[in-house]
Image (cartoon, rainbow, N blue to C red; front, side, top):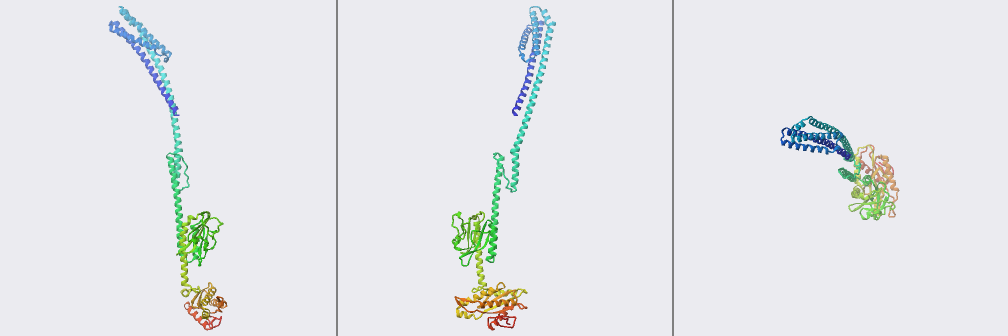
Length: 583
């Protein structure tokens, strides 16, 4: 389109040149013809002046003008006739002929004047013939000029029309080129600039809202748009990576918070049973992809028993010997995984795939248990090992502290020989009864082994201790959940019964007495004979104060011993005898 427009402009310019050339040619023709006409006038004037005055200067001027006129006539005759119309060529020929005729008259008159025929010469230059020839020349010149002017106007009009046409064509082509250029520019801007910028704007808005699911379209461009697209891709990748790191940080912080909560709960546990419930509760939250067990070491340090379980582990047994675990042997965490090339613990089922981690629970240089984990659904144990070992360290201390507290509690509240609660615990139980404001009845049994000294004297103190342990076991078993059995001192025992009335208390006392009397006791293969007990019973029923419960039960025991022993005596009757209420 641009080439065609340029060609049209060139043709239009050539048409304008042709117009200019036509004007120039017309002007030259007019100039030559006018020059011939002026030369003819000059020649006529010089001839007349010479004939009138006879001055040689005029003759010379005439000769020069005549020569000039004849030269111009020859030029007109030699003019290219191809550019002239037939009428113009004929008119030009007439002009030349009229000029030559006029020249002949004047030359003849000058010759006649020179020959002395002055009158003849004057008559010739002023004759009608001369005037007619001169008028004819002027008329011919005017006619020719009109013809040339007419033709020139036509050529100018044609050239102008042609120039206007091709100018319009050129302008149209230029306009079409401009429109095409604008269309292409619009297409390029929209396709290559506006659309990518609009898409990038939408992507940037979504990225600003942290919507990293948006996909940045691949663009192999090397311009500024391509650079911006690459920068947005880098921004998206950085945002995704930052979100991933933030998610890991939040997950790590959540894990640490759960571990901290677990530590606080472990410190608040009162016994190993509570601890065994707390650990699985938090283990499934901290390690959702892992299953496991909490094992507690027995008192003999020979075996471990599962105290808590989470997510149903399948590789390890509920109970196993200490030598079956490589972690316990080495005193360090042990990974049992065939893919790691290490030995497997013997307490694991090696037929099942997966990895297992055994972490000993140690405190104060002693192993108190083990924390066991195995992978579920391909979860990697190695990623959680640091947290597992941190929990194991605190868990070992918690178990050791509970065991130590239990031992100290037993030492403070239980009798070392019989395992029953001691005198201090009895005082605390009675004090609680005194402090409590309740209408529920309570009772106290004071139990004394009859003739206990003879067991020590006849069979030795070991036998006497064995007798006390057997009696203590029978009392604790028959008291059950209704009461607490205590060793009061020596061979005397006390049973505190709560929410038990008089008749039920007396029945429990009688059951204890009969059970002890009917139970054969052998020590080291030797029968020790029948063991009997005397029992005194006191109750808080009938508005009897709990503050005197011990004194009343002790007084009833003294009456039971004084009435022949192997008898139960209650403080609310006056009758006596074996198996009877005695007051």
